[in-house]
Length: 448
Image (cartoon, rainbow, N blue to C red):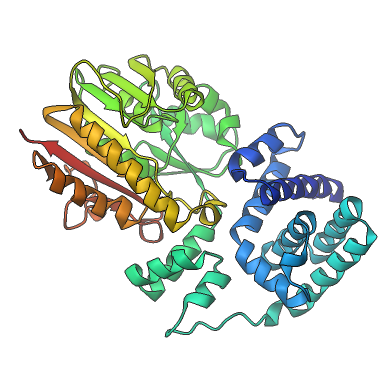
């Protein structure tokens, strides 16, 4: 790769990391905005994405390494130098594509441009020391009596998160889960079965030189290797929707039928809603609700692109929505901590806290209760999340059933693979076991 191209990529990666570090911004929209306004090639965009996501995911481990070579530690650095040192050290420790000399030279040059020669000298010294000692860095040992320090630092996860996983999963599974979260994500897509067959999508992907594999669990899904799926011609043509296989399980559990009235209380960005329309062949009355007008526009755009017309979209808070008549089925794909999808969201592990999970649980409880009130007798409700935390999943449903005696947990149909169904009848996926996003879904029948 030409050095000039790497330099442009490095500059943009630095800007993304610096803006993220100094402001309370979500990484994905920040990076998407910077990339969309750049003139980088697809290859360089992929490089920037890898550098930024990797530097953020491994922030804790990188800071621990940097502290070994900074007399006053990373807390003494301004946000620009800290971002540059993370970027440079990530390349040295993790990147096989970029030679050490290029990582040091270009990071030092960026430091000189943005902060002056004195700071450039510091960056140069720190990065060269890391290169010298990287094979002998004194990480905390993996002590089975107290594995928390090693796992949290080496695999770069918050201690509170690792602590709860150790309690639930044990040592080996916790390490496997952290390793999974740190991998580069593949992109999962769902075929638009309303308009196309699998052979047509596969032909279009091959024509664009995109490698793909069929989903291992659900027939309409594929995994592709591509930097930005929204730039694929087949996406614009409506051949597919970006969606993880795990998300398809909640819709299969819902079991929507033609002629039914169905409401999705948290519809944006529309993946599950569009899947409901596909499964019913456009012959169900579907109501999509979301509190965000901007995100509801995304649902509308997805419906139009996929050729879905049997949907009524309404802006509103799913906790308080009222409709004239009850519905046959309710989907509540609730806002959650997202801890089942850390592989795809590099900054989420640093944004989420136990306190936020408690606040989310209050929201989830209210959404679930209102969804139950909208359902007719004999109707069916699915509550789903993309987290693996019990207080948002099993415990939430158990509390609901205790308060709502007219509802019973319904065991999934044969449409759901057995390896996703636990002994209680919940549909659960674990990232480190099933190699898809971690999710939860419960089917609840209103019996009287």
